[in-house]
Image (cartoon, rainbow, N blue to C red):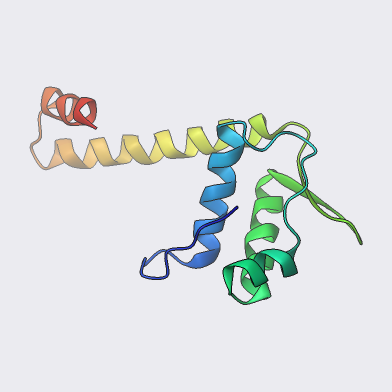
Length: 118
């Protein structure tokens, strides 16, 4: 379910968070779907269970998932609210980057052309 790039500079728990966010955004994960257990995911990926737990706790804090004691972690009923917050956060980061590029002398049209190439 999850893939880990052990050569990436991105911490493993952040890779898991990003993948769950993407799977929710693309509707692969539906509300009430159960995530793999911490032990199962750790065993499958060959990583420490604490890493999975850290990712799940952060996803829960962000409102994407919730836990049921003794049962596991599930996709929140309305994860789109969390996705909207994430989009807002990313747009704020993009805005700050655009401001920085403009302060460095980049023209708005050049920035738009660059974005359109992506």
